[in-house]
Image 1 (spheres, helix red, strand yellow):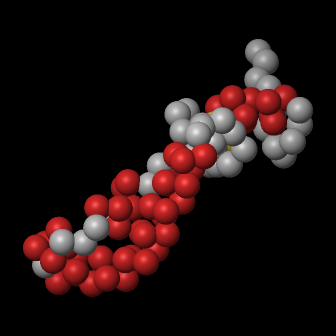
Image 2 (cartoon, rainbow, N blue to C red; image 1 turned 135 degrees about the horizontal axis):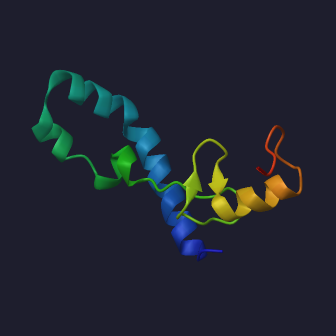
Length: 89
């Protein structure tokens, strides 16, 4: 589990992205990159880190399932993800 400060920082970034989303879209449509550069850095959606919903792990994140590979494997083996089975050939 990551430190709480990392989780809080990521949550704060996502709130900032939501706050400036409309303004960023307008500035990008106009092509006003000078005003866009004056916005806070954390207003960019690229700075938000994808994290596992269960463990908070950021590496090996599977977008389709919203969790890390380790959590996904455990859930799949326990039969908690419908339609996912262990491969055998």
